[in-house]
Length: 388
Ligand SMILES: C[S@@+](CC[C@H](N)C(=O)[O-])C[C@H]1O[C@@H](n2cnc3c(N)ncnc32)[C@H](O)[C@@H]1O
Image 1 (cartoon, rainbow, N blue to C red):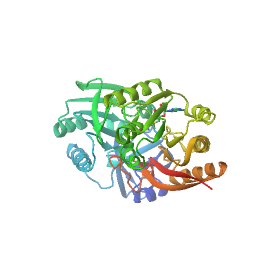
Image 2: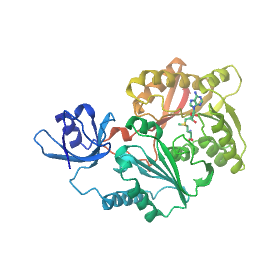
Image 3: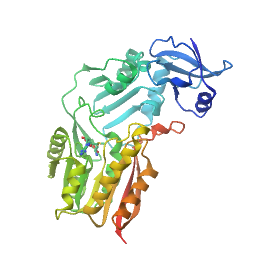
Image 4: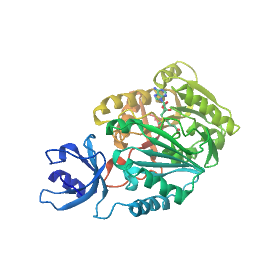
C-alpha cells in the first residue's frame, strides 16, 4: 500500500478524528493514484496516521476509513454496517437512514430503508470501489425486496465520475411508509435527497406537541407536506402547504389523501408568498420555515443569512400574537447561533421579542460525530413571538 505524507496541520486535525484531508495538505509532489485507491496516511517522519482512500480529482483528496491499521476487506465493511444497523432502534417508522456516510464511519455511502426496499447512494470514487461488496452485504443482512442504487450526481461530478441509477430486483414507483402513525408515499427515484426528508422525522413529531387543536398552520417549503400533515392528522389543524415545486405540492396532496386529510396547497416562492400574506387578513398560529440549504459553502453564508432574515421578518408579520415560528437550517454553515441572531434581529425589526421553546437537530439516524463538525448539518429553533 502506498504511503501518503500529509501536513502537520492535517496530522493534528486527524488526531481529533477529523475524517478528511484536503488536497493542499497532501505533501506528495505528484498525485499518481487511481481514483479511490486505498493509501496509508503518514506524518512527515513516516509514522502511521490513518487508512484512507484518495481521489486526486476531489478537493477533499483523502477520506479516512480507519484510524487503526486494519485490513480493509469484506469483514471490515460488514462490521461497520452491522454497527450502523444496530443503532437504529428508537425510531418509530418503517423508514430510516441505515448508513449516514462519515456519521457511520463509512464515508461515501448512504443507505436508506423504506419498508422492504433500500435506496443506496455512492458519493465517492473510494466507496464505489467496494460496490459489489457493499451490495452483497446489504442483501445478506437485510434481504431487501429491491434496491435503487445511485451514483449521486452532485458529488460524482466533484469526484470526476459519471452519475448512474440502477435498479436491483423490483422497486415500485411508490413505497408507502408510516412515520409516527402518519403515512407517506415515497418515490425512491426522486432526485431530492432520496425522495423524503427522513432527517426531520423527530422534529415533525416534537413540533406536534406545541400545536393546539384546530390551530392555523403555514408549512413553508413544505416539500411533500411532512410538517403540515402531522399537524392535520394529529391536531386537526387547518394547514396550508407552500412549495415552489409543483411536483412536491402534487405529492403533498397525495400524502394528505393517503391519510384522508384535507389541506390547502400553494405552488409559490415563499419569499413572495409571505409578502402577499402581509396585505391579506390571514394570520397563523404556527409558521414552519424549512428552506433548502441556502449556503452549500462558507462563501454563500452572507447571502444565506439575508435570505433567512427576509423570510423570518415576514413570517413574524403574519404570525398571530404569541404565535410560533419553527425556523430550520439544513446547512452546516448556518448553525444554531446564526439562527438565534436572525431571530433576534427579525424580532427587533418588527418591534417584538422572541422566546426559544425548543432546539431542533437532525434525527438520530443521521449521527453527529464529534471530530467531524460537518456531520451536524440540521439545526432549528422553535420561537414564540411576543409583543413588547
Ligand atoms: C428542506 S426541503 C423541506 C422539507 C420538508 N419540510 C419536509 O419535512 O419534508 C426544502 C423545500 O423547499 C422548496 N423550495 C426551494 N426554494 C423555494 C422557494 N423559494 N419557495 C418555496 N419553496 C422552495 C424545495 O422545493 C423543497 O421542497
